[in-house]
Image (cartoon, rainbow, N blue to C red; front, top):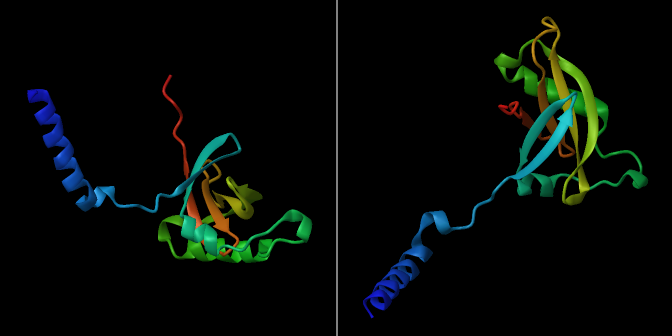
Amino acid sequence: MKQMKIYLALALAFATLLPNASWAKSTDWPIEIFESMDNSKLIIFLKDADIAVSPEWQPATGAPPMGIATVLTKVNQWIADDASLKGLGVNEIELKPINKHKRHWYYLVKLKSLENLKQKPTYVAVLLSGKVVPAMVEPASIK
């Protein structure tokens, strides 16, 4: 009987606190995209809202809504806005679909130093809306 009272008290406490808890409210969790480029494993975090405003596209319908020239402009502007990226240039570009969003695509861009060829590359994703999102290189696992 004592256990029943404890369970009832806990259930009542949770029922009272849970609706008011800030951590219980819905959150706009980012979508994780796992990619690889040149033997580097990458993680890209995209918001649903950013994907929603990005134009839809299917390869069978013709050219993508944003061409390579625009991608280069967006990436070069992103580089210019961050002093720590000075000296980087576009080395490689791939057009990829966004997982679980069949009609949404993005460009995966590899940036390399134009002066120091031994410097590790930086990667970014460019949505078809023009939004540039940095990609993180997944660290090598410890064996």
